[in-house]
Structure formats: C-alpha cells, structure tokens
Length: 119
Image 1 (tube, rainbow, N blue to C red):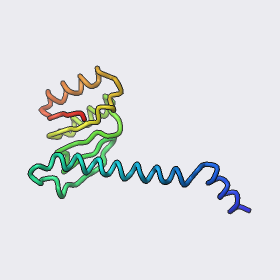
Image 2 (cartoon, rainbow, N blue to C red; image 1 turned 30 degrees about the vertical axis):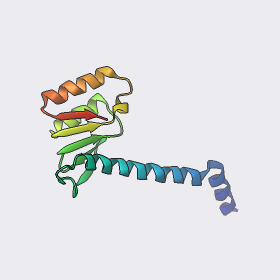
Image 3 (tube, rainbow, N blue to C red; image 1 turned 135 degrees about the horizontal axis):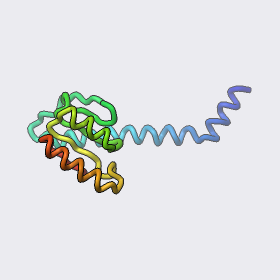
Image 4 (cartoon, helix red, strand yellow; image 1 turned 120 degrees about the vertical axis):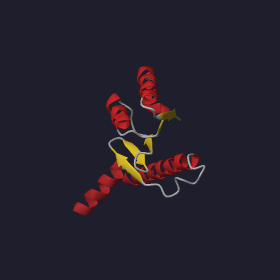
C-alpha cells in the first residue's frame, strides 16, 4: 500500500521531470564555470584550478579570481572585497536592475584594486 502511495506522490509531483531539470541545471552550471575558466586561461594557468564555494560565490585558486553566480547583495560584495581577490566576474542579472548596487560595486572594487567585470 505504501509503495503505491509513494508512486502516486511521485507521479503527482512529476518527480522525473523535476529530476531531469535539476540534472540539466547542474550540467549547465558546470559548463558555465568551465567556460569562464577557459575564457581566462590564455596562458593555460587555470587548467588545474581549485574551485571552492565560499558563502555565495566561487573562489578560484585561493581567491585569485571570484565568480559571483548566485546573488549579489551589499553583504556578499563586502565579503568578496574582504577576501582580496585579483579579479571578480559577476553575472549582470544578479544586480536585478539595482543600478545603485552595481555602481557602488564597481567603485568599491576599483578602490580595492580589484578587476571587476560583469557578463
């Protein structure tokens, strides 16, 4: 009886579709990270990079480069700047039309001597 109810629940929630979409998201996310690394590997320096998730951003090679892919808030940006990276790349959509946050981020990164780009 329990097996039947689990199967019904999975069918009702469309579990297989959710699982497939989740796998696709993980694969695309991984490809995005690899693409960013490839773009920045002109000298081949990022081929054996160590990628570490910290707070709400990814650190590459002991904070040599930071990727902001999930969200951008004042607190996260302060953490990124405090970690003293050489370069930061953020998705433009993270600023969600918040021009003030984006402008302040650009200025704060510049003041901290951090190369900052949005894509």
